[in-house]
Image (cartoon, one colour):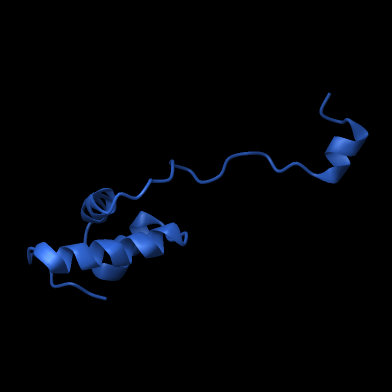
Length: 78
């Protein structure tokens, strides 16, 4: 879904685009990939997501350490 550069997106078209982008973002696609796919800036996509009421993910992805059975059963973390 390419959008013409330097063309203002308003009204129903903007709301429809925001919902489309929000669905893709919530499915796990990063903002930078979304921006590249529609030919717009990171800031534009970020603003659309905010307008759509999306809870934005924190930077850096999931940084929690994975807990494995071996680690928890042997007590190696003590």
